[in-house]
Image (cartoon, rainbow, N blue to C red):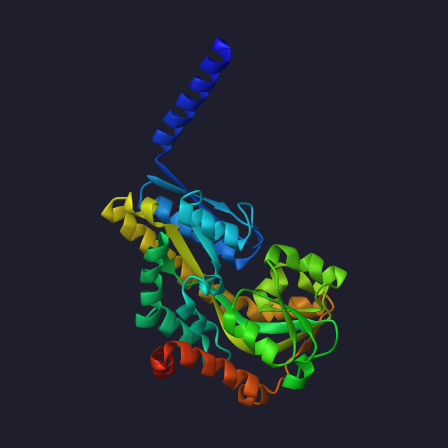
Length: 325
């Protein structure tokens, strides 16, 4: 027994000594596969942090939900079990209801419009407010414009969505929009989505192109329609206590590295999107660009979604976003 206790104590001491020599090690978790642009962002961030801190801080990345699903990663970051996480911003709709404004259908006229808002006054306030939940908000990487895939038929106009059993995320506006359009939205964790599509629990999903590509939904979905019905942002957040434990210089490096990695990932997203679409076509998906977006934008379901947000929060934030065009 004494030998066992001694062995455990020696192991703990050795681990502590190794950590002390290695400096600070940060765990960075996200849900995307290792081949996804999110992991490229995480690796870029890790290298920049290590280089600029002269190895004082090392970032270890954990892709593909190794440390839990989106909600578990978020909770883990708030509690300090995980140091840094990257998930879709929609997961904050429950804690920060005002974040729903970014998911409103057809809110952003272009990617550049979205970047200007997310990196500007409106986005910075959202990041700052994450301190209330034990997190340091760092940046808004790109998820991208969301598009619908399904096994029924191409989606060309709002009527094509009626009755569709579609997987949705935690976005309040998007769930409301699909319900008002007559679809049957079913929120599911992304880790469960492939199997749900394969078994017919849901018959459709809506994600940006890079997610459909990296998660191989083409294997269980036939039609991809470029509806671009909502621009979707990710967000990077860090446990606030861990962030505050760093020196001011290290904190600045973390913040700058997060934004640099975000800029890098956004550029990759734009650069690679058409290639991803071609890959999906080559794998057998039928890609439909013939979408009547004007009909979607004018549909009462879309205007009702905007009206609900205005009733709850007032028009000020929407007006600021629209003014940024």
